[in-house]
Length: 225
Length: 265
Ligand SMILES: Nc1ncnc2c1ncn2[C@@H]1O[C@H](COP(=O)(O)OP(=O)(O)O)[C@@H](O)[C@H]1O
Ligand SMILES: [Mg+2]
Image 1 (cartoon, rainbow over the protein chains, first blue to last red):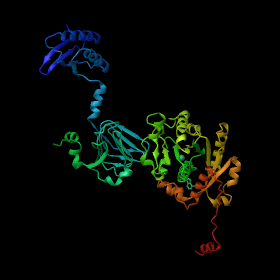
Image 2 (image 1 turned 135 degrees about the vertical axis):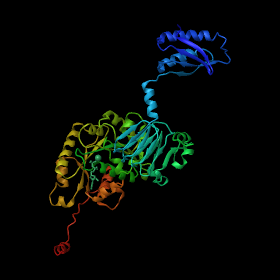
Image 3 (image 1 turned 90 degrees about the vertical axis):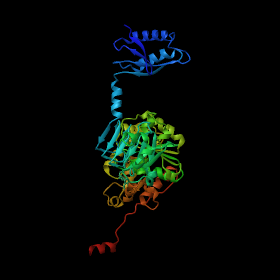
Image 4 (image 1 turned 60 degrees about the vertical axis):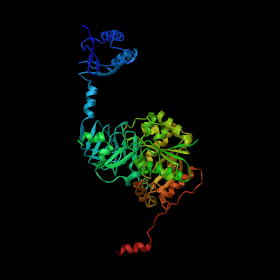
């Protein structure tokens, strides 16, 4: 039986790789298939051909994916659309989980402590001067902030920090850093303050009432219409 | 090429950080370009005393490990134009995160850009001390008139003798309480200087205002009419090579009439 199979679908083409076959054999058969393909009637050099690669219960490593890409790229006008698998690696799974959860934290972050979190954070505790709360997600802060908060760590400027940051030392979003001392009068003592990065890559302040304009993506996620 | 001076003491709490901040500020006020380095990894204070704690983005460990450029890690004190910078200590790393070679490399990189590089040494004689003295051209040893502080200063004099720097160490006696010294409750200035056998750079009175101003992030030298401030400014002038006579310690003797009034209360 063949372990690499080409199929036409409504949306184009699929190449299915047998998930129980070893990768070396897959590679050889994949190469053969492509050689046949460029001589078949489905293929015209002008239009090119795009296909998905279906790997079933096998998650290809980044290296293996690259090997297949290299084979495809050697031929004119063939493209891989995407890899589709029924399984994912632990890393991907954790990433997905972390990206989509809200972690609730109720603790005091003392001077010199860095608390690093993944995903969105609902913070109920206190951050002392010299303490840092760092997340790659958004931050919703009900507690007292005298220290430093960083959202979208390390470089994601689309994240938001919501809370009263009037007494904070710094608010950081991605790579943008705001020293609050220099802007104290701009930052109201309102828990509904939203800190975000605007189109000019500078940190700005607004209010939750304007969340739709600030971040439509976020607005729809929290159920706004 | 600037000069690197380490401010050290052995004992904690005798005023190394206060002295670093005030000498640095005084030199900047006199038009010198100054960089302060905080080597008290894990327990940084210099930034707080200078009122720069809100502005720290990177620290000496980031710079030493080449995570950011040294220039990026420097915090500018806007009060002094382009004259005054702080290289903050790291707060959340192991206190042995730095090596002597790394610190020396940083000091050597700063010296051409500044007139003075002042290194605020942590208490103790372990790695933090070794790092602090590694790149220095000379040392200032701070003590108070207390026997325990003098004993620790003596230990430092001995350690520095084993690894001599370009210049001999000099002494600052800090937190002098004139009436105690006058009463003979503590060693006096000449006894301490003689005992340690190093040159006296200056003396500083114990004054509540030192603590009060530090709390606001304003070193006392910014206040011209304060006896402790005068002590620090004299020290800065001597560092610049001026000859400044030693401040006379005035004991506030209660007047006869005041005493008499007290007796009738
Ligand atoms: N001349 C002085 N008069 C009054 N208080 C002082 C004086 N020098 C230092 N202090 C206070 O002593 C304490 C310890 O000083 P610090 O500079 O932090 O010491 P170190 O850096 O040696 O540990 C601080 O509270 C400081 O304000
Ligand atoms: Mg200190």
